[in-house]
Length: 165
Image 1 (cartoon, rainbow, N blue to C red):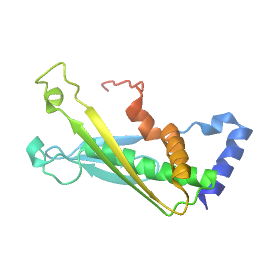
Image 2: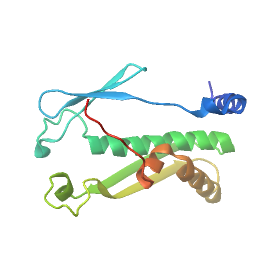
Image 3: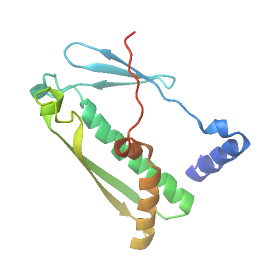
């Protein structure tokens, strides 16, 4: 199924009933030996591992949570570029996204209560290739930056509730 088919099919379903636009995602996380964590993506039967580098007490068996956060942002950008290029009819041969982020460990380790534990700065670099002109790709970038769900998570506060079971 092409992306334009997905877009049109989703539009038809949402036009028929706006509740069709509401989707939920769920993952379950369980500690393994050391700092490794097994993540099970519910419903879709995918599993991945998260760990920390040795310098942060882990065994470095896979990427750490903040690297996955950057990966989520970069991959969401790539996908959103594809969707919006299809929606706008913009020819797009390739998309490469590099995401870099800086964290001050004072916040994570509690060495300073005035330092955020999360990213202080995130930089997204996008390389697009294709036959369209620079102005077309700038408009595409504006649409992607406005509609990318994970970029929205980075840019805006999201209500989160935690509880102990």
